Image (tube, helix red, strand yellow):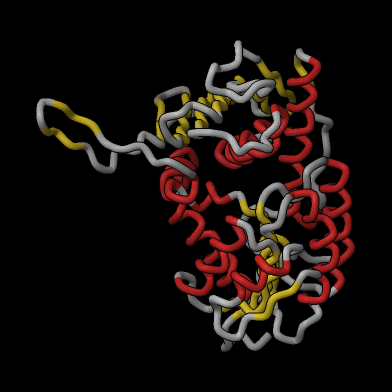
Length: 339
C-alpha cells in the first residue's frame, strides 16, 4: 500500500451494517475508499457497490481479498462467517476492522487469536465502537485520573425499541450485552471472572418464548461488580446508559439530554430510536481511527484478545441464562502480543 494514496477497502457483508460502512467510507471518512463489496447475495452486493465509483461486487470474500485493488478488509457479515473471513485476511496479511462479535463462541475466537499470534503481529481491530463514543471516552478519562477513587460498581442499561424477528434469548447476551462486557473491561481495567443472569417475568411486549428483559451481573478480578439491564423490547426508544460508583463519587453517561424543551406547560426531549442514530459519531470516529492507523502501518484500539475475552464471558453468560446460577469465566493469560 502506498501511504500517500487512499486505503483501498473491501467491505464484507452488504446488510444494514455493511452498507452503512460503505456509505461512511465513501462519504464521511478521509483517506480511504471502498474498492470491493462482498455478500453471499450477489444482487445485494451489486446494489451496494453500484453506488460507489470504481467498486466491484463479489460473493466470495477470499476472491475479493485476492484483488490487487484491496489493501484492507472491513468485516460486517454475520458473526458465524467471521472466522473464515479473518483467516483468509491473515493468509494475505491484510489489516482488518471486524465488527463484533469477533466470532460467536470462545473456541473459534481462540482459533483466530492463535492464527494472529502465528503472524507475529496484530492485524485486527474489533468493532467495539463504544470505546470511540465521546461520552464513554470522557468517562474513561475521568476514571483514569483517580479523582473518584477506586470503582466499586458499574450500572448499565441497554434498551431497544424492539428485537429483530430472529433474536433468541441467548442473543440478548451474545449480541447485546457483549457491548457492556467490553465496556466493563475497558472502563474498569478489570477482567470479568463470573456471570450471573437473573430472569424476571418476560415483558408482555416480548415475542413468545423470548426471555426479555434480563439482568446480568458481572464480577471482576478487581473486586468491582458490573450489572446490565438488557431490555430489547422496551417499546419507547433506544437507550444506552452507564453509571460508575466509586469510593469518592459517581459519574453517569447516556442521559441523552442534549436538547430539552419547555413548551405548552410541558418539558421534555426525544429518545433516539436505534443504534445507528445514538452511536453515529462513534462509528465515524472508530472507522477513521482504523483508517489512520492502518495507513501508518499500525493496529490500535480493541483487538483480537478483547474479542476473545468478550466471547468467553458471553459464553459463560449464556450458560448462566440457560442453567441458572453463577458461572465462572475460564481464566486465561493475555499473550505477549497483546500486552
